[in-house]
Length: 191
Image 1 (cartoon, rainbow, N blue to C red):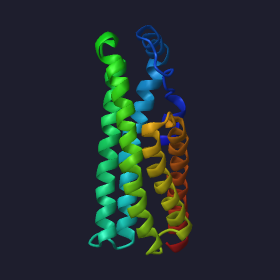
Image 2: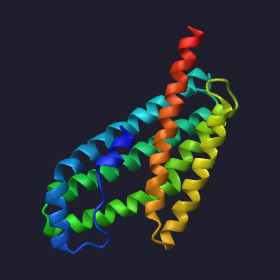
Image 3: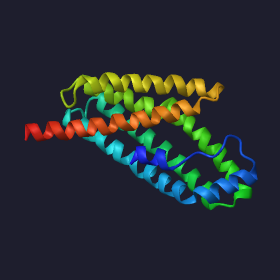
């Protein structure tokens, strides 16, 4: 769902005028709404999957489990705030809320890469590395993803590098997909 949301929900041109923004919104209204819905639903699904890993690892009372829960709360909160501004931009009055919502979307996207993604990836990756729920490769690649998000998140505050974070977001979507498929395959072998 997350990968599809990124594919179907194109971003507007950089620094659009009000007329360009309205034209973009009119052309892409349905894809923005569906992409926003997919992203809004996929964030809780990702966190439910992460909570499932915590449970399978027996880490509900361990620090790594609690940090994974906390990272999940941050991720869902940031994601839902971002989606709120998508809907505000597309459904509100473009002259008064459209461009403001677009600026707020960009601000919230910084929060995703600075804290939300790294927090969840670091805590969950540590948990994966200290358990047998998933192959440790997922723990190592999760740490790399979290570190890359954190570094790019700070760098993007000073550089126009959001497009790199957008690509990384698609890569992390594949990480979640591969992790869930691996867990399903392993569950089938053990049952």
